[in-house]
Image (cartoon, rainbow, N blue to C red):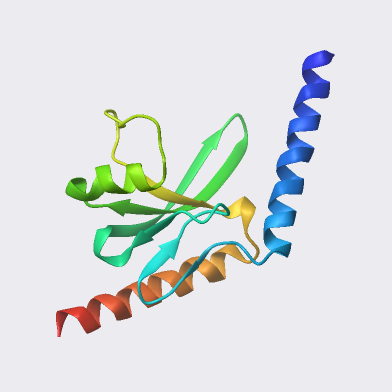
Length: 126
């Protein structure tokens, strides 16, 4: 019973933090220099991005969807330090994940980000 109460409290706290971040105007966005990947303002610069894709995972009947931004392997350490992550991940490569449950209109955001990335890559290759 105590575990249920703590779970509900933490769920409410997370929801309130997401709501207050949106009200302050913080969130996921991109510009000519970078992509901001979470509500705390962590960003990945365009020259650090190797690939942007869609990730869907199902477990225990629940489905989570996210847009992942994979960084180049030689840029991982500087991104990890900038995001203040504690340890280097030796099991999988770091990628910035934009969880679809934290943003409004995630499908439209994903499509617009992919389109902007393609345009950015085409303009850099010329």
